Length: 436
Ligand SMILES: [Zn+2]
Image 1 (tube, rainbow, N blue to C red):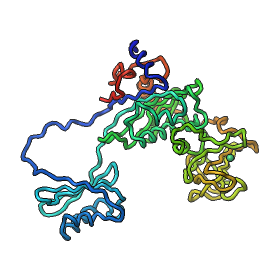
Image 2: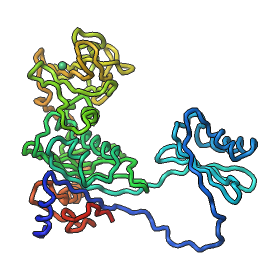
Image 3: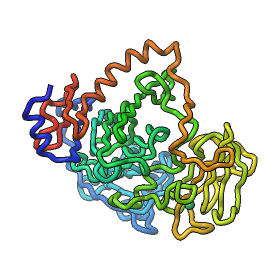
Image 4: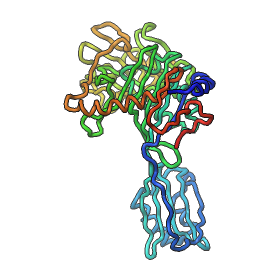
């Protein structure tokens, strides 16, 4: 139960109020105390960024003779290609005593570092995977301008890297892609809450994650999606509380919401140029090269120039539906007349061919010769939770719904404390950092 103080501090935050709590599902194990056996000689570290045209060999050559330089390169090549190193790759040279090189660390990407160490007889290399821990981010927000702004400018996610917020947007979009077109349907006053399981690196950035439970309230109607993996093979899906699949025969839009929104930095400019009523199609502004997805399984009826639509793809689907995608800069490989495509498959890329004043996608949906608004088509197309998995579904459902409901819906007056580690006064905490 919320205390009065919770509610008042919650209100004081103003709307859109957004709360971010992180619940550690499992923490990094404590290193504990090690017995000191001997003291390592002090190590000097020198961090270098690979310059344009510079090679790892050149950097090594400043500290090593030719034989050692070659040996280090060979050891490195056992883990990665020295030719494929990007400009600004971070290289740490580890010296002992009088500038004697003892080791080299090369950060290939946020998750992989090649570590080369001088042994008694030879240089040895190993690949060090950046360790991650798992936590669950519980976040809610109410929408003032757009979902994009609500997440990107969310003060409670202030310490989350921009790219990580982008992953969160992508994952929410993926969950609701059959129910809601975030770029067209979101209204001020809409709200969401989500439980997002993340893999987090020691520096706080995220390697990846997925939504385990989410709720979106759009114009007063609540949509819920709960992750469940019926076969336990990692190929799970989302279901509503009744165990019905959230999948539909058509995606509501052929582009990812992130790609539609990200070019409008503050999310305040409306990314939709026209609506279906104005000219029988929806125009989505997005950068040239943005992947365009087939909104449903189908067969390619046309691939090529099509009047004012420029480069266009026309797909034929079941039940007399046709979809058209215009102004493409290019087509995806393998997409040709007569070929089959599946829902979500990339068929081409945004461009401005034909009659277009700027890069955008023209999307049309036609049924039996008549244009329809994609938002008005709601054809279920996913299996419900299979009978043999019902018991496990029921067992997982209750705690998952409880977890979701433990997140105070922004703007609402209903707070449900969960049995997690989230402190009671989390919403009103002066600092937003409730992470254990
Ligand atoms: Zn158009």
